Length: 72
Image 1 (tube, rainbow, N blue to C red):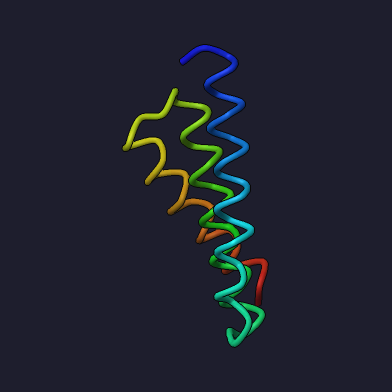
Image 2: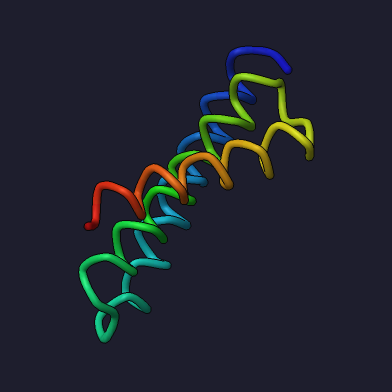
């Protein structure tokens, strides 16, 4: 993935995460931290692995776990 496509993907991902956080309004702080961690981890995993599905899912799982731990 070239740099312009990567930046466009990252921009849309940030927009999607921001829009998705509106659904977190009724969640606990720990739940919100888990969801945010999963979103950020998924984006980071996708960027680091060039958009592979395994990298995206792996990043989301790791990010969710880290967000959950931070939310304690």
